Image (cartoon, rainbow, N blue to C red; front, side, top):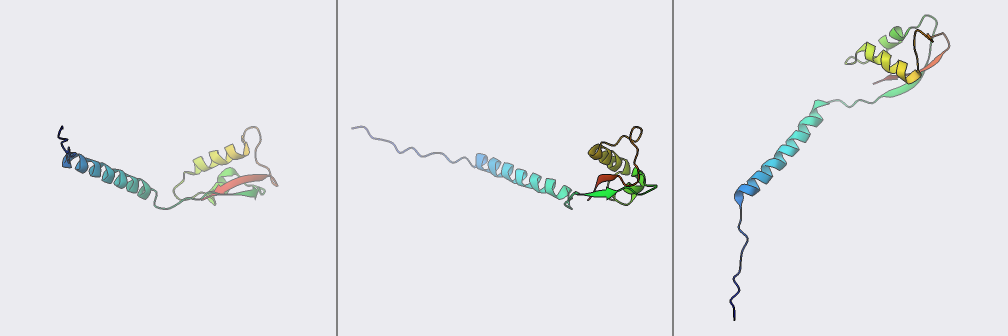
Amino acid sequence: MKRIKNKQKKFYPCKVIALVALLLLAIMGTGFAISDNDKPQYEIRYDYVVKEGDTLWSIAESNVSEDEDIRDWIRKVQDINGININKNPLHAGQNIVIYRY
């Protein structure tokens, strides 16, 4: 009869340490990515009725958040509403969709 040797798997502490280190880095990386955006931003869209003398700039002044460029806000509102100031300027009574954070 042949004797069967009991082979035990070798324990490799270097591999375990490397795996734990990778997991910690992954967890820490995720935590840092989340903390970059410390305040959640919710976009609220609503209808706005253009008043006499309103311009996109004057509407933007009261709706743009502190950390947003007013020109970017105006471009986005133009895109949302299909507004081209040269072809179809704003007029009193017009309904447009604007947003605020």
